[in-house]
Structures are given as C-alpha cells and as structure tokens.
Length: 595
Image 1 (tube, helix red, strand yellow):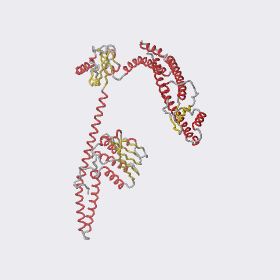
Image 2: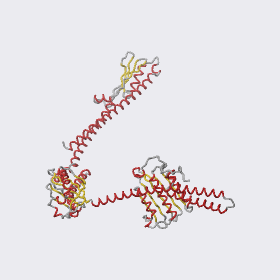
Image 3: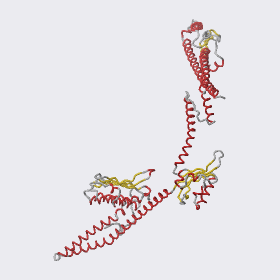
Image 4: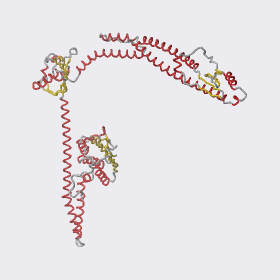
C-alpha cells in the first residue's frame, strides 16, 4: 500500500467522521428548531382560539354560535403550521382548515421526518356548543429542513471529492523527490561517497537532503580523519605500539624512540621482549594473556627497559586489536606513559604533606612548652614575687619615723616586686592567653583587641566576629589567636598605622561547606614586595601556621597604601563536635585565674 493511498484513505476516514459529526449537529439543530417553531405556533393558535371561544358575544342567545365560528375560521384559514377542525356537540365535523399550498405535493423522506419530527401533541378546545381540534402540521418545516440539509450535503460531498483529488495529486508531486533520495542512498551503499542531493522546494525534503549531504561529507571526512589519527599517534607524547600475536611489533610512534632509545626502524618487525625487563616479564605475560581473551588492561604500573639497559617507570594500558571482519583478536595496542615526572610530583606532594604535619606538630609542642612555662612562671615565680611584695609591705608598715631609710627601702622592694609581678603576668599572657582557656575563641580575641587598644591609644582597632567561633578544638583556637596577635603586633609596632580592622568570620563555601576567614587590614605604610612574600619572621610564622592546616595566606600590600592579610582555614580542619563553646583543658593551678 503506497503512501499516497494511505494518506488519502486517512483523509477519507477523517472526512467521513467529520461529515457524520456535522450531519448529527445540523439534524439535531433542525429538530430543535422545528420543535420550537411548532410549539410556538401551536401556543399562538390555541391562545387565539381560546380568546374567540371565551368571548361572550360569540354565544349570545338568539344567534347561531357555530355559524359565527365557521365564518371566523374560514376567514382566518390555517393558523401558522396547524390544522384546525370544528366539531359540534355530536362530534360531527363542521369545519376543517384548508391544506397548505407551500411546496404542495412534496414531502421529506420518512426516515428524515422521524429524525426531526417534534413531539407536539394535538390539542382539543371544549366549547359550549362543541369542540375545536388543533393538530400541529410539521411536514412543511421538515421539508424545508430537508431541502436545506440536502444543499449542504451536496456541497460537502463536492468539497470532499475535490479535497481527496487535490491531496492525491499534491502528494504525487510532493513525494517525487523520494525517488532521487532512494537513488542517492543506493549509490552511497555502493561506496560512492560523492553522491549529493539537490535543494528541494519543500522544507522537509530539503532538510532530509541537507542531512544526507552532511552524512556523506562526514563519511568522506572519516577517511581523512583516519590519516589525522595516525598523525596524532605519531605526535603523541605517550609511546604507542601495536604488537601482533607472534610477539612482534608492527607499529610504533616516535615517542617510543624518545622513551626507550630505539628508532622506529629498529622496533618495527622486532620482538617486543627487548623492552620488557626480565624481572617483569612474567607479569606482562599474564597481562598479555588477558588481552588475548578480549580484556583490556588499564594503567598497569611497571618498569620497562631502555636501549641502554636502564629501567624506566611507566604506566601501560593494553587493549585488544580486533579484526572488524572476523571479530577476532589479531594483536595488542600498547599505550605507554612515562611516570618519572609523576612519581617525582607525588613524592614532592608527600614531602609537603609530611612537612605540614611536622610544622603542625612543632606548633603544638611549642604551644605546650609555652603553656608549661606560663604555668611555672605563674606558680613559682609569680608566687615568689607575691611573697616578696607581701614581706616588703609588712616591713614598710612596721617601720616608724625613726627608721625612714628602712621604710624607703621596703617601699622600693614593694614597687620593684609589683613591677616584676606585672611583667611576669604580661609574659604569661603572651605565652598563653588565659581567656582562650576559660572563655573561648570569641572572648579571647575580644580581650586581645581590648588589650591592644589600652596599650596603643593612638591606634583605633575595630573588631568584627561572625559565626559560631567557640566550637573549635585547641589547635585551631590557638592558630587563629596567634594569627590575629601577630597581625596586631605588626600593625602597632612596624606599620605606623592609625586604624586596624580585624575580621574573624565563618563563611559558606561550595556544597554548603564552611571556611574560616581571618582578615586584618591596616592603613599603615605597607610592606615592600619581599616582605609581602613572607620573608619577615612574623609573616613567615603566620604562613607556616596556616599552611600546616592546609590553609591559604594572602598578603595584599603596597608602600603607603596599607596592608591586608587574609588567612583562610578550610572546612575540613574545622570539623569538631558541635556545641563545645568553651575550652576545658589545661586549667591553671589556682582554679582558673592569674591573680
């Protein structure tokens, strides 16, 4: 069955369904219209006759009412589409309205009349002297509907026939390019890749033609692409070899010569065993056996032998070479990558990681030593100085006016002891901030900033803390504290700054991860490029602390433009138990105070 016939058959079926639907709608519309028309005419007729029959003058004594009714009905004739019959008291027909002259002698088909005929019943009016029977006559209305629908039906049938002919003819012309397309495809099947289709007027066939042309062009380019692939193989930095089932090399690229020292001429036709070190030959033999069974090997790290006999670290990927005709394995494709630089890079990364761990360990030990020294200073030296001050105060209080020199010396001892006490406690705060142990990171940083404000009244220090900063372990807390402390020391002692902004903020990163950012910005004289790179001991210490946790330190500075130091600690090192707000270890011996 051709496409043209199928399309015409589909259109015919759709047309039949459409005509049936339209016919149903029109017949239903006509049926309702006739019903409304007959009902309305019957009601008007009944109202008119009731008005006459109920008129007292019509049945006055001494007059013949039936004669008056006959005369009136004769003058009226047919009332709308209704037949009127007058009967006397004995039910004898006295008068009958004349038949309709409209389209006399014609009637609609009986089946059509049954479809559209209204259900209006006849009505009998009872009179004092007889009765009037009103019978609806819908035959003329049905005939009008039949004539109208017949005209529409003929018009629809003519349109349907013309449409089928036009579609059949147009399809014949439209599908004509298919012969050319099938011919071009046959030529393509025979290997004539130069076949091309012309441009067609219809956009659909033109799209098919353009797609066919692009496909033919792609197939032609595939041939040249094979040549380009061969060029890529020659220019590849990886050594590529093809080994047949007899163990001989049938192809190798120039990278083989660079890696192993053998020329292409020396390799092609020779056995591949010349580059396989004897110690690793069994391992490679097992891998080759797997490849023969159509199994690929990915990234096998081993050692191969150069022309000079040196062993080189390589990663080998082996894939089976399959004959497309027989689908059998006919050889092996080797992709060999020199892993020397990769191993060196991995070694360097491992050393860097170990160096970070070592630096972190040093920082931990250093803080532990500082904590121990601070504790000893507080417990031993602080108590001794307190005792000296107490004794001096007692001597000064017991000395009277007769011993002014003793009193003066005692007061001097108290003054010196008080100064030593303040110095000791200042050293203790530098060695180990007590607020960090007892209050948490936020309060420790706040206390640090307040102390720098008191010690440096000429320096305006602003502080901004955001996020939950009291949930980190001690190593993170002391690192953040030391970074802020060192930055404030640089700003106060070296930068000649008048304003410093300290920001310690928790921020969201990618995939809802968190990171801690420490930013200290001053308006001082700035740093020279070599200092900005961290050649100064203070910046170097900050960088080592931050990098020990895998963080990043960014220094932005230029002469007379101020300095901005940004330290970023990644979210991985911040993962600790939630809800820990205060450090609870390493309490001081006096119950948590420094006197």
